Length: 107
Image (tube, rainbow, N blue to C red; front, side, top):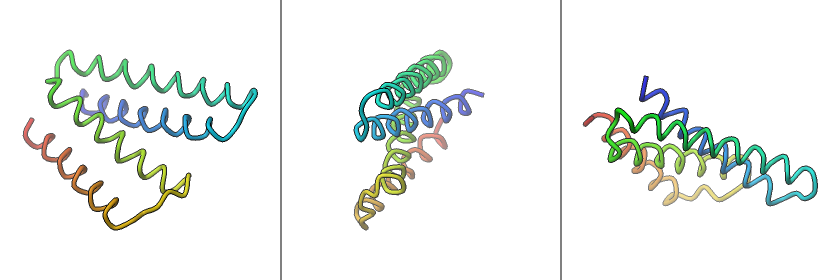
């Protein structure tokens, strides 16, 4: 169950970065809506991470959480914000995924 919650926490991290990216392109009421989403995803992400660390080592939980967030955010940036998908960018994201899988395999 902890791994499931940790994955959800990482996806919430992707959610708050997506909201932040959308908020920078708008203003007025729409900006406040995106920032509300940012705040909600941030609270959910941090809360779930804190819950998971009650029973999972912090040295495992935190890198997995940030890895999911980093990989997800890069993919969101490529798909939704038209950021470049260069060879080296994808190569290093792949090594990050391998590192997260390695941490899971060792814990």
